[in-house]
Amino acid sequence: MTKTTRVMLAVLAVCGTSAALAQSSVTLYGRINTSVEHQKLGNASATGLVSSGSYLGFTGTEDLGNGLKAGFVLEGTVEADTGGTGYSFDRQSELNLSGNFGMLRLGSFDPYSYTVTADAISMHNHDAGPTGDKLYDGVLWGGNKIAYRTPTIAGFDAEVQYQFGEKQKNPDLTVPVLGKTTGTHKNGWDLGVNYANGPLGLGFGYSNLKYSDVAAVSGAQTKFSQFALRASYEIGDLTLGAYYQKQDTKAANQKAKRDVYRVSAKYVIGASELHANIGQASKYKVNGTKTGNSATQWTLAYNYNLSKRTKVYALYSNLSHTESAGIDFKGSFTMDPSNGSDKFRTMGIGIRHFF
Image (cartoon, rainbow, N blue to C red; front, side, top):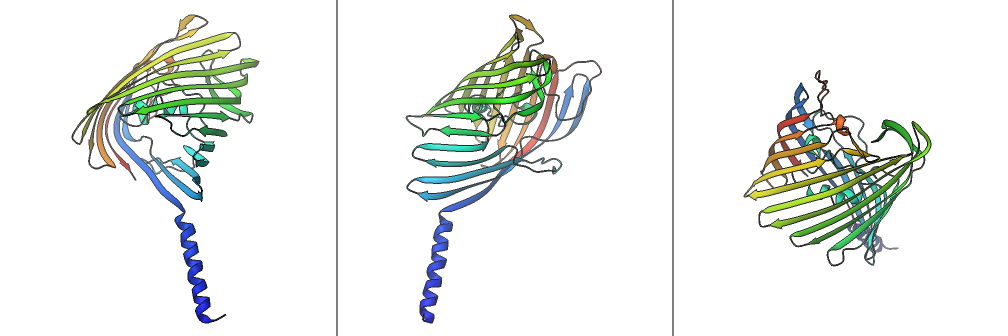
């Protein structure tokens, strides 16, 4: 083999490697969202930094040819206020295969029923932090999922998810009719349907999850289910959104139901955005009798876009009841009100940056 031949083969090898690398890509992305907030729970209060939904992620795809692609997403929470410890891919961890047939997903990701309903109208802060939606109750969180998403046809797409229980114990399970307890996670499934056509958006979601051997109901099976409907519409610089959710829990001989509503609005004036939303969760109806408290949450916010990726904002949010309404949220700081009130309020200013 001549020297010239060896050089030509080396060049061809490098070109071949470059071509292979060009068919695949890995992207680093994330969001840093930090605010200074003054929060109150009853007559207790605290002021400090809050990291609201900050994350760091990696996503990649490989072109397999003939319209087929392999991909992955690894995304984990970042505590931007403290630097955090023990980083893991707790937000999303999936491997997928996509093509003209749609997409097959394996791993841990949000229920699509949530993505196309409550999350789709969370326009202020992407449903994160103290002003995130505390009334919507998702069912199929976590991993061990397999999912199929259809291609988009005439504005419609859908995704069905199946979650393997793998007999995992949940040590902090909240059953509306029983309170805090434990149980063995069984299998569950989730369905989300989305429609987008110009200014109009519609969504439907349904989830069903089962637990067995729930404490205080040993041997019985506890079922959680929910369905939700969402609509949104853009009128020039004004965007309106709303959803309705029905929550349903069955444990032993007890049944608990709750209705949740939320409406939201965003109005754009140049680089400024005005945000408002209000939600209502009814009292739980247990075996036909209302119990506990209802809850109302509302938020007012102002965003100013410094660029396409960076904005500053100011907010105020009020949640009428937390624990007494079956809502597991007590703010970002350790607060112990002496008057027993579980009313929550927060006000603050912050910066959010995407990369």
